[in-house]
Image: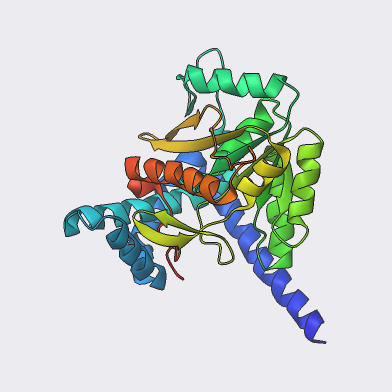
Amino acid sequence: MRETLQNIADESLAALVRGTFALVRALGPDRASNLGGFGARLLGPLTSANRIARENIALAFPEKSAAERAAILRASWDNLGRTASEYVHLGALWDHDPEQFDAGRISIPPDSAERFLRLRDDGKPALFFAAHLANWELPAVAARRHGLPSAALYRTPNNRAIARDVLRMRRDVMGELIPAGISAPIRMMEALDAGLHLGMLVDQRFGRGPQIRFFGRTASANPLLARLARRFDCPVHGTRAIRLPGNRFRLELTEAIELPRDARGQVDVQQATQAINDIIEEWIREHPGQWLWQHRRWRT
């Protein structure tokens, strides 16, 4: 009986979410993004997450003035609202023309494009790390649209009906999707064994992970990507999206990162995790208003 009631509740909420998605889709990508940013700037400060974000920004930027930190907080809510509203428009957002790299909504610098094509055509597996910056779903869309054999780790919503709908939407615009969970590491290893390019977001707190320094403070980090790099000894690249004015984006792909190694020549998981997070910290410092400050990154 309890399971039946839960299923009814899940389906009812999923129906409401589907209706919301339909309304947002009807707005088109630009109006949806603008409205989402406006709504988040208006309502975000009324939530408990606003206090978390404000405290995190103060921890990360003690040297900045109160006004500067407030501007970062406001921009972060704007970015989060836009990203949420762009979710149903991921396919429409992607208009990149390789022949005119800076002409459309999506801009990819020539050096990043060259690296992407090299990875796509070399027939070898690789690892990609990313962070919750700008619209963090776009690198996976890029892989799918331009023929990079890929898989991505993602977190499923707790509501099973919503999770089913979200997976259906994502599958249309992204590559293979691996849900986070007990079986995820095995599936990720299988993806690399199959020669796929595996991507994951690595910037959030991971309670069982190694302790690193992040913005000058101790934080628990996710070591999974470093462990996979150690096991498979494959290239590791960073990828990010940068939100530009006019609802445009720039996507960047780094060269392979030289990860620290131990005395036996294997990737040092602790130091490699630190090196990856150092790069992410640099990215956040460049565009602090585009990061997801609303989670407890430094909770011990």
